[in-house]
Image (cartoon, rainbow, N blue to C red; front, side, top):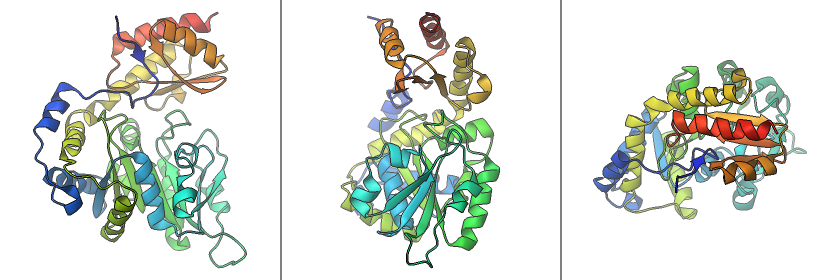
Length: 336
């Protein structure tokens, strides 16, 4: 049988043959003892890429985000973020359930960062009547914003304000690689505009698992303790770090191909390409359950974001022929 064309997410990719070889051949050691050379090399490389002192390999983006936010926010304080941010939508209330951290959200225009809008909502540490805002979390690219790339000028404005205000910035950079590829902004530029940042390898870069948290050396030392407490201390994890290193060498340079295919898909489905920033295409105003089921019957898998919204994501395992086939199937269904 022909394999389905899977546009549900860029998390569905499988390791390439080259990545599998790199994993099999990885030099490993016990990473809880800080003795895995492949992990250490990856952490040093990613820290340098983002202009930070240190980094920590973690099993998932959720763990990276949650530890990153805990490093800059104490129990009883709050994190401020967008209402559709991944950290409050898809991470199971972890900040509150695990760390006693409160979260407060601000509704944005499609996930687009408006620094002034967030700054206006910050609550000071000096008023004991209020829950103090310790940090602001920013997501780039924005998942529920359809892969939106955050404006650099807004990120800079938030960072500049935060230095004097004593409020930290956490970057959920699950797809920061896509943001950089689409905008041309260096990863180091994005990195220097955050106190802590979590970057994911199992989405656009196509590894089977793994994220890296970057921050100062002092914060990463504390992060190692939190990772162990949360059950994220792993042993011969170099087999996974090798996949990440391979992805940096071979998959990071090709992300533009995914963006080009997303543009093609958007055009063929009548979606304004200007609203497609990276590798996601959003179909609004559709009968999502019906379209998804009908598409699945024809070998095309899509993600239902809501009853009237479908998300399509291009990735490493989807080529031009697959996108054209998916466009034909979905186009036919949308015309009904």
